[in-house]
Length: 414
Image 1: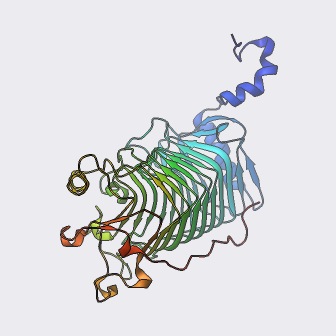
Image 2 (image 1 turned 60 degrees about the vertical axis):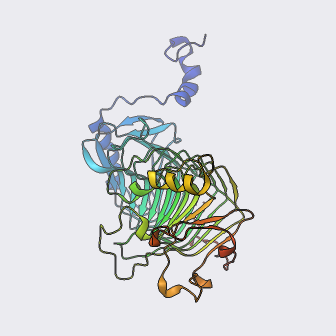
Image 3 (image 1 turned 90 degrees about the horizontal axis):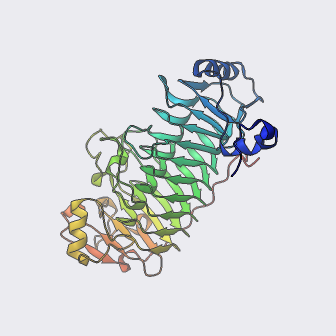
């Protein structure tokens, strides 16, 4: 039997191993540690590295950093743990209003609000950060795990996001974005790119969420998103019940959604492994098919239709056999029988009437193009009460020019 770490005779020999298995609890009370760390943030200068040693630190207030050029570094996402389970003040675990900011190798757990929020910064690196609500999926969990918003030149890599009640990794109203090699699990939305442009999302493992990867344009925001590439990801078994708060955008995402494109343009989905998402492996929808349709007055320049979508070279398997919601279940049974399944791609069928050709199809520049072997598209024709449901691939047999790779400038790979 292994001796406990507390055994005096072997304490020194086993200290490192024990630290790896269970980070030591820090004796300083929540208020004392918060004061110490917050003071370091306040007094920081550009170029400073704020190291937080291994350990589980209990905080009862949120932290904030407003100095640019700072790096916050832990000893590892399973070694340096900032726990906010008993937080009584602050909307986030850590709120950053700064540029040239790096955070890496630590965990943020059990915040009542968002885990890590970075607001209005440039040149942001979030690397090997874990955000988690340890009780698992629950509506009372914070909305966002990793949450850069109104940012530019952003790299999120090798992070883990678990059990957010909205999105595990969310990039909003931002530009020039790379989200790569992360794991998102048991969130409502695993990874979400919202009202952002020039985003590459690749190499991620996105499993057991309600919806895997979302590319959205919301109606009441001044910036519209476009030009997102989703590729080389594993997106499977995203069948967790939707536990988002009622009225939020993601509350309308059906459980069993692999990739969801909503009201966004110039989206490429390619070279992914997409499997066993019970509603559909890919869903393409407009503003009119969402639960937030009519809730807010759209911005004047808002385009409610998804256009110039290109799906190619993905590997699909399973999916579509048990859609979420009575309407979709009934439609599946009617079209494909009780033991059948939806095709890999669902489209709500809404299209801008100003961009239809003489045959009633989207013009080439705005078309939803699928070049993906045997994959078919189900046009649900929601705008016409599903009177003209179409299943097939020929109506989407087209191609678009491929988007260029996102280049972070300055590079953030250091």
